Length: 202
Image (cartoon, rainbow, N blue to C red; front, side, top):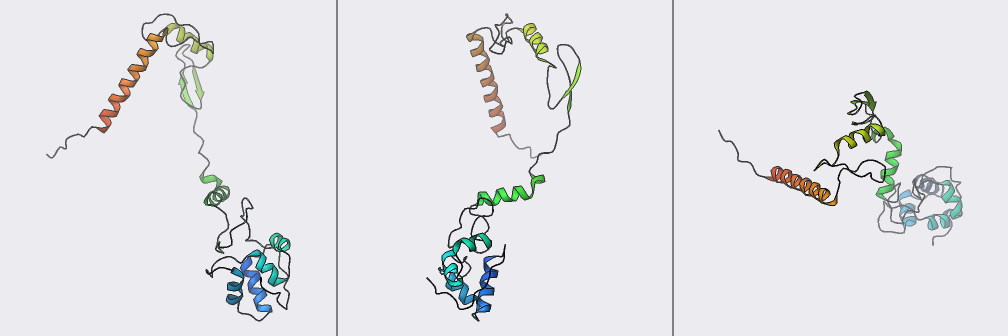
């Protein structure tokens, strides 16, 4: 560990580590780059000064330096930064950097409000507005439409589901038929989307 420098310098609240090291070097008539390289403890001269080495050189406790200087911990989650972290780094992980950017720019990530959609109920033919497209204005109208429609395959009356509404299928066989039909339609749409069409060179 480095020895304590003869001239003590009081750190300012919110001061960066580089600013405090420069003032400490100027007070003791040392070149700032030499003192900074000595306090880094690593080969990279752009790295951040280690807290324990700075405390030993300045004569201040690590608790006081950590509480006063800005730059030893992440600005978002207060996690300690590694000894080899560069001085320009303010966050411990890319996730913290992204969260801090989102907090500084909330208007860029807040979805724009959508205008209400005007719908017409299929049961009572009344007009109503809602945040998205709806087929019924209430649960009762939905119940009326389902009772009127019956099974989607054979049209027979269907038993109620767990919400008290008529089920779209009257039996397991009709439900399996509906699943096979939907699967066939999806495969057909996927095949048409991926099929190579001949180029018209005329």
